[in-house]
Image (tube, rainbow, N blue to C red; front, side, top):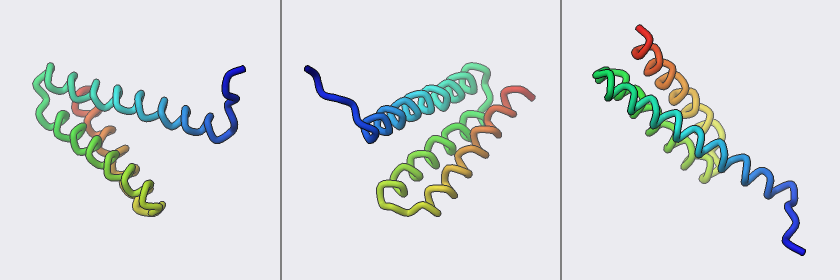
Length: 87
């Protein structure tokens, strides 16, 4: 019999899926911005990716408020990147 998957393992897999798809979305925004020549959209996406990376480090250091702040910053920057592509 193989190893059983406990509740904690599901959380690890869920976090891995969130990270992979989050990276695909951010990378897609960067690629679309570069392709369409939207420099500001690329820079917003890059700032969002950097902010998301910092939030991951804050989570590892058990700083939930800093984590929440940087996730909020990342979300705002990625929304701004999307708006530059639409407008």
